[in-house]
Length: 182
Image 1: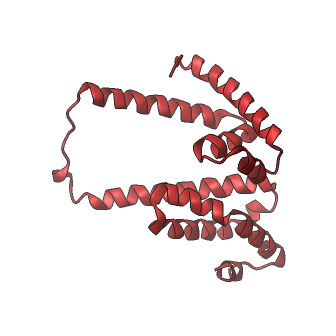
Image 2: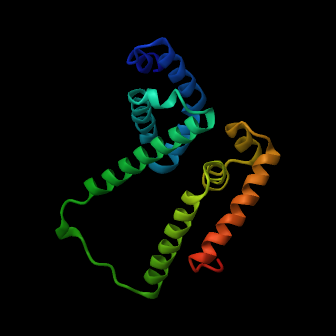
């Protein structure tokens, strides 16, 4: 499949950058897509992500290995979420089939939980890139300390340090948002 992607590119420099991106990120991208859309659609999501990478390869030439990985993760995550959103929209035949949910205490709890999650996501996105990448890989995607260190090209001690700093900053941001426990 790499040959197909590389054949879209013009210069040898672009081809070598794309090859490096492909070889170092394809497994991670597949794992992320699989977690969102399932095994059956993950390959399509990764394929579409690499097409997008190829289309914008000039943006990848001036950024570091970690930034490339982060950008690839973001691209495949967004494509997977769009695929998931589109599949849900296609499953609903018309608005006539839509029923308003009954608002019980459990529904209200779920709504509050979703609001808290959106605040937490916003706070994570506000972290500096190095801390955000570490939090994403370690806590969101479930990589262990050793895997996270390898993916970010840093030591395991640096992963622990970044997580400690990220937790402190997140705690501070969440307190400002009015979330004090949980």
